[in-house]
Image (cartoon, rainbow, N blue to C red; front, side, top):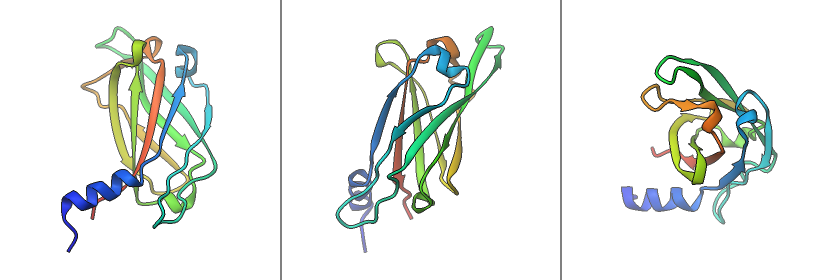
Amino acid sequence: MVSTKNRRAASVALVALALVGVRAAAAAGGGIGDELLVASTTTELCSSSDVHIDYDVTYVAALQGYGVSAARLSGLDERCQGYDAIVSLSGPGGALLAEGSAVVDGTEVTVVVPAETPVAADELTGVSVVLVVAEV
């Protein structure tokens, strides 16, 4: 039997982090492409294609302005299905503004920004995407 600690260690070994710098203008719906690779010596390559990130922007009353409500990832390899996609949105100085996750169930996935951590569109300066093997 594999312990939780070992599963987490294995998950960390399978993580790829794609840091993509974005400008506030990109938060208004611009797409960003970057290469995202997830692999280890014991697993198949999850994704070696360009992964594009688009944003859903809506009016957020708590911000009294427009905020990022979701990040949409597209171009994921089909072998990434079942992985957890964790998206972290950052602001000036790399400060974490919000984080959300969703299970990859196809070549596209939408990760919703939690309502309790709204992100003003004009404060978004970066995004990190991590794909992790979901714990069973």
